[in-house]
Length: 77
Image 1: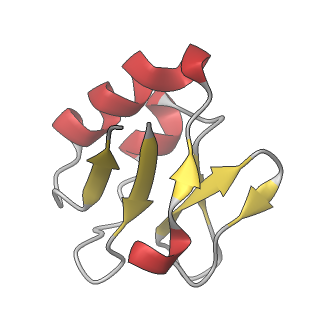
Image 2: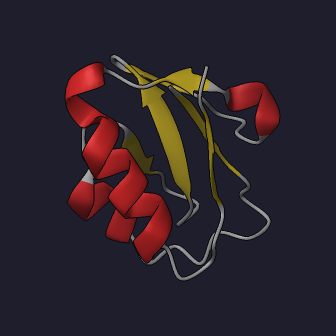
C-alpha cells in the first residue's frame, strides 16, 4: 500500500496524524504530509507517494475515511 496527500485539499485538521502518526505529519505550514519511515515527503502531492508499513494499513485507511478534506489518496498493489 502507498499513500499521498493532496495539500491543495488539506484542511490541516490533523486527524490523520492522530489516527496514524507513523504515516502522517503536520508541518509548520499547517498541512499534513506523508512519512516514509523518518523521511517526510515535502513537497507532497502525487510525487510524495510513500510506502505504508503493513502494521499501519488499517490506520491509514481510517485516516482517509475520516479526513474532512478528502485529501488522502491510497494506492494498493
